[in-house]
Every structure is written in structure tokens, then in C-alpha cells.
Amino acid sequence: MPTPEFILRLRESIGHDPLWLVGTTAVVVDGERLLLVRRADTGEWSPVAGIVEPGEHSADAAEREVWEEARVRAVVERLAAVGVTQEYAYPNGDRSRYTDHTYLLRYVAGTPEVGDDESLEAAWFPIDDLPPMPQRYADRIARALAPGTETLLIRDVEA
Image (cartoon, rainbow, N blue to C red):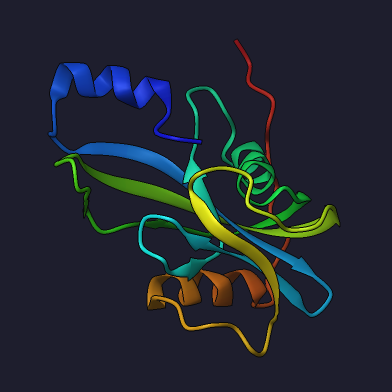
């Protein structure tokens, strides 16, 4: 999915000024395999990641992004980490930082394939033999795969 409409509307008002957005990273596992996509913008391998839509829970966004980008169904098992990214400067001059929610997801169904224009490839890799990738993605994967406690995910929003 290209840049979400809500961001395009914000950009009409603020131009290229920095935006602070909520992001999600989905580390999808199936036994000893890990799902990765090769990003269209950089050519780098990474877990599926994306922007949380207004009013959307970041866990729901993780599951949605996996379907949109890799045509795989997966369900969130637990929240693995919350972090803040560096500021990104995009080729068009836009600047953004993200509060990233990294989730561990369990594979349910589907064969990886490119689902939108954000990815060039989607594939399973053995967890112990991942392709080269930037350290920030490797760190998110390591956090998601590390043993941890269960996380209480509250998805219902009260008015």
C-alpha cells in the first residue's frame, strides 16, 4: 500500500516538516522459518513493517501489513519491543520518526508472494541463516525471537 491517505492530507498542511508516526514490525515465524520481504525502496531484506492507521491497534496493523505485503495470514503472539526510530528523510523531502511496536506473529496460512508495491520479494528463510540486512532489522528480529513473558494486548477501544 502506498503512503496512507491520512499522511497525504497531513502533508498538505505541514509540507515536509517532521511527522511522529506509529509504526509496527511483524516478525512472522513458522517453526524454524522466518518471513522476510525485500523492500522496494532500499532493496534490503527486512521483516514486514508498516504504518498504523488512525484508530487502528498496532497489533491489528501488524497482521494487516503481513497480508498486504506478503499475502500471508499470521496472528500476533506477543509484543516483543517498543522503540523509537531515527528520523527518516525520504527522497521527496518528507521527514518522519516512528514509535515502532515489534510483534512476534505465528504463521497461519498462505504462500509468500509480493502483495503490493512496497516489496520486491517475499520469502521464508531459516531462522539460523537469514540474508544480510541492516542491524536495526536484525535487532528487532532478535528481540521478537528472545524468550519473554506474555503481553496483555487490549484491542477494544472504549468511547
